[in-house]
Length: 193
Image 1 (cartoon, rainbow, N blue to C red):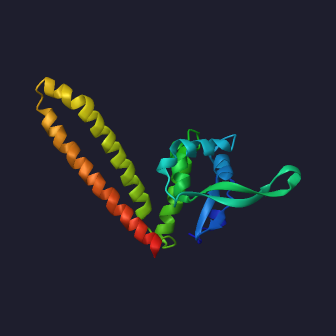
Image 2 (image 1 turned 120 degrees about the vertical axis):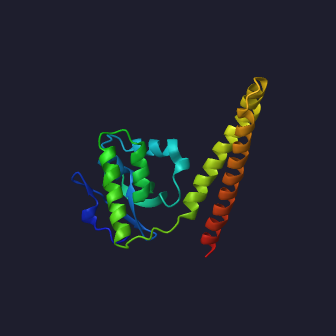
Image 3 (image 1 turned 180 degrees about the horizontal axis):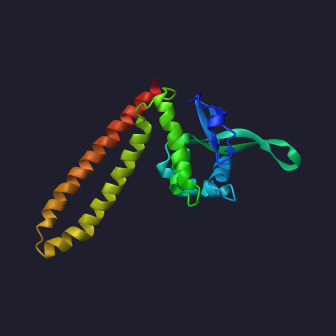
């Protein structure tokens, strides 16, 4: 992703001050807030805090950066940064007028980078392992409610739906469990090499 030109990272006349780290381009919360039309930078922090479980390590991280402090003195501060994919996800949760157009703009850049070979659209095992874990957690919540409340109610009225749903929920749990474990093992192998 190092190939993205700084001139390409201009949205509605706002030029991002990008950060290069681990071979990728990262955008700060401050830049995202300005580009998306938020008056306060902490709007991005709030979006992240509400939806942190949906972000993978390849989408966001914190960096120790020198920033302007009181009286223009430089000081070190932990700053959350976002990859272009992470910026897209932030924009998915954003409620500003610019968010929809920003999402298209980021996707256009990512699509172009894949086509030109500047980024490898390799399978992100860590992200999909995380998504499979979230899917498994949701499936287990549904199964729990099924066992505690829905199945007994359907059996009381002799509904044939009780047996059908039982089979589907068991299959869903087994599939998501297998996906979660398989993807987690693959992600862990990738970290070792």
